[in-house]
Every structure is written in C-alpha cells, then in structure tokens.
Length: 370
Image 1 (cartoon, helix red, strand yellow):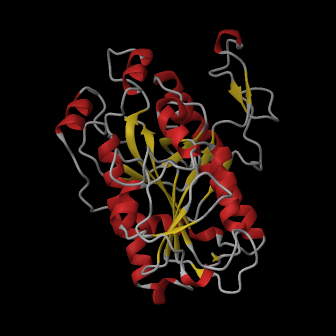
Image 2: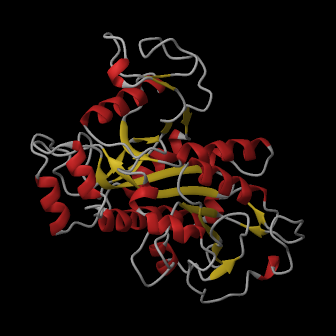
C-alpha cells in the first residue's frame, strides 16, 4: 500500500475526485463520433473498439496544468483529448482516437477501483473484448528490493484486507502476526488450497514480455531521491538509481508503514503465492480492479489474459536505519520523496508498452505477446 491511506495523504485529492468540477475543461469536448448519440451504459449501435485501457487511480486538482497525480502526465502527453462523460464513476473518461486507447481514473481504494472498472466493462459504448489493460500507479516500495522511482511489473496481486486480525499485544506467543486467513485457526495454519479473492495471478507471459520490452529504459533520477536513498545504509537495492524490475503487489486500503509491517507484507505475499511471489510494492486498488475484470471476463466483455500491473515507488515501505516508523511516516505525509520520479517512471515505462501494442495492432490484436 503506498505509505499512507492515500486518502489521508491526499485529502484534497480525494475531495477533488468526488467533485464534478475537479477536472479541467477538455481540449475537445465532443465525444468520439461513434458514440456521440449513446447514453452512458445504454445500448450503442457503434461502440468504440478499444485497443488498450490505461487505469490510474487518482488525480490532484485539475487534469492538466497543476501538481500531477497518476493521470496528468498521460493526459498531457498521450493525446487523450476526447473527453467522454462517465457519470457512473467519479471522473470522466478520456480517449485517444489515433491509438484507440481509453484512460480511466477509478478513484482510490478497492471499492472505487472495483466499482469503476465494473462500470466501464458494462458500458455498451465500448468494445473491450480485445483491449489490453495497464494499471499504472504509485506505490510504497520495499527497500530490500528496489529504490524509490523504480517501476515493478507484477505477476501476483495479493489482498491485504481479507482476513482475521487480533491486536499484536494480545496474540499467542508462537504467532508472528495477529493477521491470518478467514478460514484458518491462526497464522501458522497451512495456506488454503484455493484462495477466494486473497490472491490473483496475472498472465506471466505478458508480464515477462512487458518487462523485457522496458527493462533497459533509463528512469529519471534527481538530487532529492539520491539523497533519500543514501539514508538506507545496508540496503543495496534501495541505494540504486531507479530501475525497472519484476515484483509483486500487495493491495490494502490501510496505509501501513514500518519494518514490522514490511516483514508481514513479505510473509503474506509469500504465504498466498506458495513461495512463488516476492513482495515489492504496496498499493490499494489492484485486487478490486482485477476482481471486476474476472467477473467481466465471465460475461465475455473483456479478456483477463490482457491485464498488466505496473507500480512505481513514490516512497519506501519502511524507514531508514535510525528513524522510527512514526517519524518517517508523518514526514512522508507532507509529500512523498519519490512522487515526481515515480510518476515519470510510470509514464516512460507504461507508454512504451501501450505504444508497442497499439502501433503494431496487426500483431497483437489476436495474439497476446509472451
């Protein structure tokens, strides 16, 4: 989960997402020609054929011209000039008619992401049957694996909310954590044979293809994040300049922080993936987004094998040596040290994949790369 209840960190951002006047006037207010006469969610004789959906979770203030959230760089750089009303959610959609790419801002947290994704998937103005999905958002990042500004492609999405919990001050002595699965008798019980929303596995072939395509991209560095990562003595991966890697995602709506919870996150991901996954980034939304995609896939509305998750570290999930979790968290609440670098990394890496898929649509329309 990035390092704070993103709603708490971005109180103003959360309010802006809910405000109908939160985003700037579009450059081209008329919707795409084929759906001009179609009402949101109603039958549409000429739905837009979408090649890719860029999924972001929040914006700060306006969509252009101010402090950027996850959507703004896409809006300003990728020709998302056609604004499409989307009253089913908190933010209108944007469309690039040249590349046939749609962009959505879901809202923060699993409830918003699941609801917005389902609303989009059921909207008959769009044909999403062959669309690729790129979830691109900021995250907390484990200093044991990477540095802030780094971008990680996930294979496993693990939910950090579904479970039983007992306060750590009241747990039995042989329990490492007070958190354990709903149908288990404690954290030492074996993993259930079949997860029920606690873990999802994405298309590993597509993830590996996206990583191979982007692993050599030079990500932005700056003096601020150089100084911040230098504090992490004893964590060689945290001290590296930003880079592209493969690493799994833990989604939870509580913005947690600290070494003890970081150990829990690693254990929880390892537990649910039977040791195959590696916790690298913490966010809030993926399990909600992908749950809706799975349900839409059962209806034939989307292809679940075409989903990618990319998270870039805006902050570390635990403090540097010699700093308490509370002190570091409260400082980061005033502005993530890696926010600017993370947003740039998301766009640089994510747009490389989107451009490849849409420019060579004849290659990827019917065949998912691997």
